[in-house]
Image (cartoon, rainbow over all chains, first blue to last red; front, side):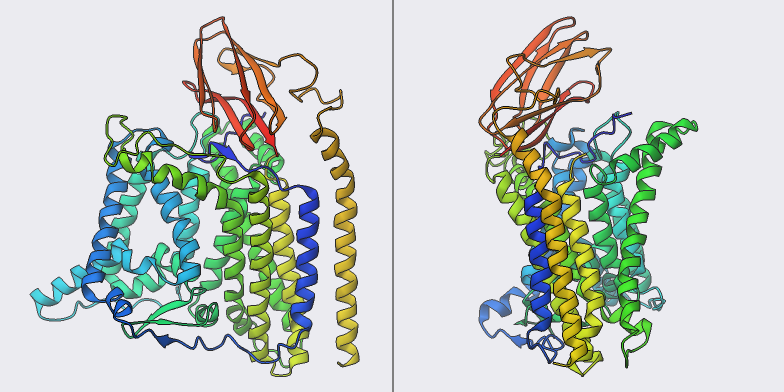
Length: 464
Length: 140
């Protein structure tokens, strides 16, 4: 049986598999650079302190001022509203409707990319946070006291966000791909999901408090916020400042479940990359197994994909835990729990690298649609032309296949080296003796090399 | 450096070289294959290769589905992409990425002939049924 369809609703063009020679070069460079990164004299931790310095200029103050916060919040609420409205009232053609591209490409991929460079750019635009803050202020004005929130069960930590993250990707690449009949998630379903998610989020904010929920359970705040830890701008005490890139990540994973968030990110991206390549045969045979037992085709496919997505999560989690477990063998090692939390942030650059490697081309191509016909004709009616760009389209010649290959392999190599650097830096905290720290990192090196080779392998067989 | 550290580094270096060699060694056959199929002439034993000979590949549609499954067509950038679709149902054939559409009447045939100027993998489908009929690969 070979009618498993494209998983994505939006993909008109798929990337070519990375050729074997580039794969070999990528893998070799990773190993050699890793080797030198460890052997050079990096004997003191450098990323434990972010060295945040406030930016004094009026421009920097203006960026985080209250009127700006109100404006950004309004923009966020407005854009979410446009996406939901387009999804519910617009065309069912996924590629002609504003909703899918905006939610799953512009926001879902755009925020991680820009957050990793700049800092938390999502926070001011977060529509649910904006509504939650207005509601909180309103409550105080009317009731004359702060709303009495439940205390959040701290054991849960970021687990709700990790599960939510899997659910968001599941909706697109598992629920959306429906057994050889339709192609991908339809805009109605995406808009409905966005409405349901909004209701759930606002309820949770009312229960536990806006900022508490944003830091722990709100999927998008936690997920984009994770990447923003790599960025070089941060807000402290209401002031915008510059900080050492990557350094804020060092203290990100202190809440329980943080490792699950970053592993969920790597796992879902891996699954999406593997389902039409590396896992294709296994998925097809599992799918047939269900189908032969009388399960209808759509359910069979969704069940199969769900199983494989969860297997990815378990597998990647296991590799990480093995690496952490290995470090316990070095004399003077802290507890397993400390190590598990202590090295979670070193996977953030890997998660970003996987995102860039798998979605860079989709982002570049689909954003052309976003800013041409989807902007001018969000409902896809073919009768609207708000900004005169409705007749625009995607120029697939904008970047060549070879450029895409180099970006993919380059992202994996750079991401891996950054992850390794963060891990080495953290090891120096636990093992002040530089030699012991280095030795503990052979385990992390094995983990990182495994992730990179797995990533490269996925790209080299991106199509079955 | 202590001896144990040196030994560990030596092991790592050996591992790096071994994996590097293995990767290169493993890839050399594939690279040869790639040049063989990537060139202008193609081996006769790849029946799915589209630019083989002068014959234009035909995708036959029966009951709205491609006979023999989704047709794999492979080209190099700059080639002419030529194929025909013979259908027993009236449909619209859509080549994604290149965004080309042609109607085919029931029992009729349409031919496509366009330069392979966008690299990547594209699907051709029957637009009304959302049925994929071909996967077109354009290598750089």
